[in-house]
Amino acid sequence: MNSLDQRTQNQLFVEARTHHGFTSQPLPEGTLQALYNLTRWAPTAFNASPARFVFVQSAPAKEKLTQALSEGNIPQTLQAPLTVIVATDKKFYDHLPTLFPAFDARPLYANNPAIAERGGLQNGSMQAAYLIMAARTLGLDCGPMTGFNPAKLDELFFPEGQWTSNILINIGYGDTQKLYPRGPRLSFEQACSIL
Image (tube, rainbow, N blue to C red; front, top):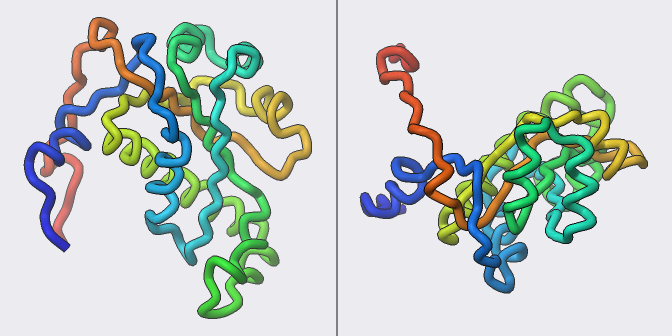
């Protein structure tokens, strides 16, 4: 595998920002499929892929979503052409016979609710991050959010109880006039150790 050029690295990491405002530019046709088709190839434990993605685009669906949002997240969500609810399928392990045929990994989760919950959340959160990176490769900006009432959101969107909300991600073309000053990051010495 070859190293990506500096321009690409900058687009994905260095220059990319968390956006709190979006322009009115619509998403290109096929964006939802392109986002998922990139995201699905990224690794998860046992290839379990526990995340489920609900693409919220319509005005009625956005209004419904605002009922569960923290007040400060409502304007940016209504502005963004797309909000993705990244949920976790509590029974993700039912797909393991297909997704991971090397051996029967299903009982590792099906017989251990605590391990299934932790594995679903960990791997689903990774998939949320992969979705952000996929969006950036498509030239889109993102605004991930955890400022919402999960119980209310689940009641509104997942009343059957099998999926539970994890993270929300606004996606579109960011309004650079609404960017906050960039926050600092920890240095290598502060965040890392070598053993």
